Length: 131
Image (cartoon, rainbow, N blue to C red; front, side, top):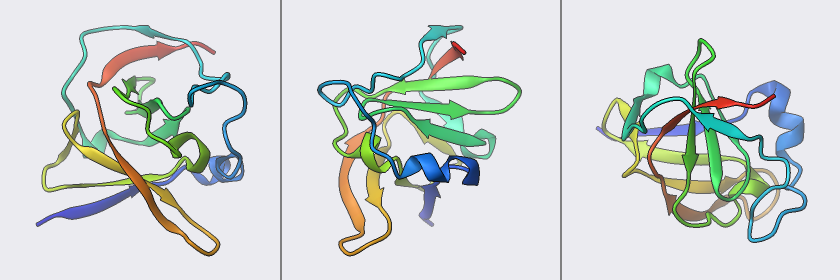
């Protein structure tokens, strides 16, 4: 059975989720925090460990898996609209989100709401995010 999972920002982030990423060229946001790799990249992370995801720009998603552990996905290609809408969905029949999965950028609210395009993920790099 395929499960539909929609990742939405926490209510505290909902206000900022409406604002497009400013600055940056080619979809790179100017305010993406630096991250330092802390281990070998992983192909998958368990769905039940994902507490939050933060879309940083059209190229970058950070996943919080609790206990101060973060994974950064640097997309292999630009995912147009991801940094603007900051919301996506994915479908999987597994209990993990994997680098081979596809995400679909979603726009909510207003006329014309719905999917805006799809993009492939990449490896999940464990990182320490600069403050």
